[in-house]
Image 1: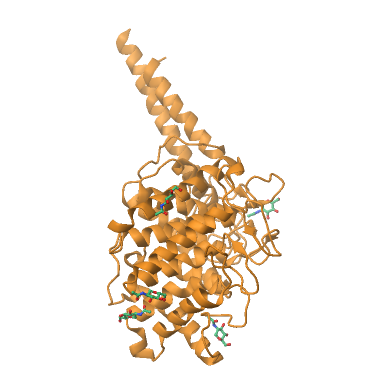
Image 2: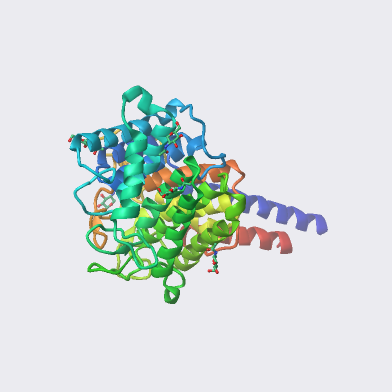
Length: 448
Ligand SMILES: *[C@@H]1O[C@H](CO)[C@@H](O)[C@H](O)[C@H]1NC(C)=O
Ligand SMILES: *[C@@H]1O[C@H](CO)[C@@H](O)[C@H](O)[C@H]1NC(C)=O
Ligand SMILES: *[C@@H]1O[C@H](CO)[C@@H](O)[C@H](O)[C@H]1NC(C)=O
Ligand SMILES: *[C@@H]1O[C@H](CO)[C@@H](O)[C@H](O)[C@H]1NC(C)=O
Ligand SMILES: *[C@@H]1O[C@H](CO)[C@@H](O)[C@H](O)[C@H]1NC(C)=O
């Protein structure tokens, strides 16, 4: 009797485990290296605006040369001998600085778009320009990287409007605070401060995060941030990409502080940044939809599904786990990453990576096989990168977010995937494996 019972429960356990594995085998897709390569190629083709170029350089550093990423566990400043994996980033910085020199604008000026617009966007290229200087690229190509970085810095600090308490405007023409700014500017200020031994600039990076949060956080929305306050163009909605920009920017400042010479005397700043990233996660993840995507405005059920913000937010969950040991939202991030990497629901369930199924004739990347990518690997559906209220077709920033999500996931798995099973909100596809786990536990407890 007793033996029989054990037998049955062991059998059931084995069956449940088999089911769990095969379920995740069918659903828990990862992008292949070829597919990620195609994502990066589309990013390279599509990135033309300053923030897209800057975000591309950040994504490439994280993915190709993690030893230079402020988000990975490396002491700062980095080596002055650039590995060849950094070449693409340096060459982007070179093109930007060459064009700036050609434009021959006098006086302090941003790295791009000297004729106005977003004050906050061009500094996103600043880290790449600082790295070009730091690794001695100027000695070979004659470009003045330090001069370009310094002009950009002083332009921001001296020429751009500020609030009375010191928040630097995202726009040149009038004071406007956009959540986007937090990704573009504070990481540049912090990196500048670390490379030039200027702690007050690192503090300035932190203060910009602190001030932006003070103006944009919405306690009535559980800690999500509004998109734009002050000026003629306000948007008090909880734009999901904006929440992602803010969390990802604060994480960069956090990583820069933690890995720098100032880590021990800026512990309180690091702690606050950690809390503010968590606060965004706590506010926004309850709004994840059952299909594991965020709406373009997270708490507006009428807004369209947006894979772009879903990707950048997932990247910030993996990063927060590695930098600060916070695991609360990992199951949700895993669910999002898997959903974004899932095979097309049209293709028959057995048609996995290799196959022919319904593949249109175009590209080499098992075309048409993925639910959230076009045949040539543009992420979809995505918000229009130039008009935040409407759906778009091709989004360079979304391509960068996919690269950042995978780089972050890889760094997280490299340290043993801590918190993969943390208790968290589980929806949709993830619920399936949850029920399988419940089944296993019940089987173990009660046999049958
Ligand atoms: C640099 O200028 C060239 C020629 O105007 C232009 O095609 C290219 O897109 C510019 N590159 C950047 C990074 O702005
Ligand atoms: C440029 O790099 C040199 C080291 O080669 C460093 O001393 C200097 O502070 C850097 N300048 C900036 C603006 O980062
Ligand atoms: C730090 O940077 C700021 C802004 O460029 C500058 O005004 C200040 O003199 C610098 N401090 C040091 C110690 O170099
Ligand atoms: C950290 O946040 C707390 C709570 O908001 C605040 O009182 C404190 O001044 C902050 N610390 C720093 C260094 O800004
Ligand atoms: C999936 O089916 C829909 C509706 O029939 C169609 O519009 C779409 O193009 C299909 N997608 C793929 C990848 O085959």
